[in-house]
Image 1 (tube, rainbow, N blue to C red):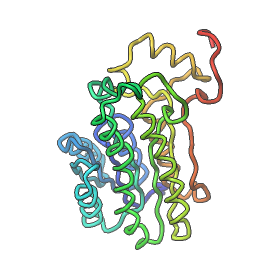
Image 2: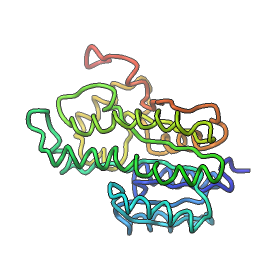
Image 3: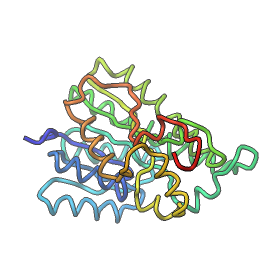
Image 4: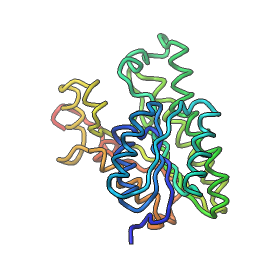
Length: 262
């Protein structure tokens, strides 16, 4: 039997990349899936692909930094499928034109800072706020929040992105602590270099080559690698894992490269 048979999952940022791969993986594992994205048409496209395999799925749109939108997504999912067991908070700002304005502390546009906090961190809070009561009613649940390797160390740019993603794990630990005895687990995934279409679009080949050399494996991560980790954390196979920050980065965070050959 699939390990998520009978479960209901919400995947935010589900229209492409890691989110779409995760929505498909959770469906393959037996879950009914609500695919959520600010681009509702693309969310529906992914849901259509899942339904074509015989699994259950719906597509939902909304800016999850807006509390009413987050509440509506949770309510619509519970109404459609009767419960919520898994929440994968993957929505984040990754458009290259936005990230190009996310610079240094002395040059930071305040609108970029605020929007980064609202979407990258605030949307995860809001989705937890409304999903947790549904999980309590069901007696259990698993929340898998998405952070980033940018949260683990400083860089010369993208300050707002890194800080917002650093806040994600604090949220995870607080949710895990407050809801653990209710049967609800929460964990953070920290991806390193994952070759999504968005990554390929806004990083040059030279940068990608350098990042690839910084991994300790001969293989560079793909969206399905993260999707399989989400499925594990969503399942009962991980029932004794909560409040943890789990890196999936080919060992990139395990060492410091001292020269271009490392």
